[in-house]
Length: 193
Image 1 (tube, rainbow, N blue to C red):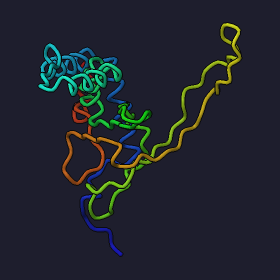
Image 2 (tube, rainbow, N blue to C red; image 1 turned 90 degrees about the vertical axis):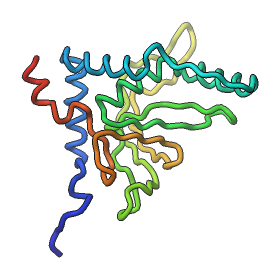
Image 3 (cartoon, rainbow, N blue to C red; image 1 turned 30 degrees about the vertical axis):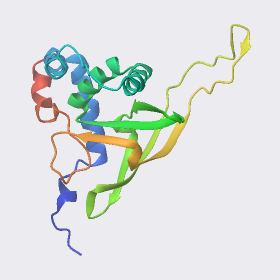
């Protein structure tokens, strides 16, 4: 069967996705121009911060508790910066305690596969995640308490589509992965260092 064109042929393959994420991360942290671009964009989008006015005091109290517990004042700025250099956000939401939603970012390089209906990539079934955690020194006690902390772990998990909010930039509707704002300018950023 001959291979013909189609939306699957314009995707960033996994290794290319990892490469662009690593290079964009490098430029974000080593290029004054890239760092300034992220700062300007974030300041423009967020300005002096986010505020809201909720008419129902009980709802406002619930929202404020969510905002404070998830450290959203800091998190929203980080999400804005990450969206620019990563080209996508994967925000995992879960109820660790009944009635209390927790949000955490998933790093795009840890998602090995976005499992979708083959002919409709917008119908996502789950996100397959696989990565090694950090290695840490072996600590067995802390202030006379015995600790049973793993030195490292290898995480393999699958997140249902309804638990992940996936935002992607700089791509067509038929692509699974986002592209960094730096993707097209990586060579130029490298020359400006």
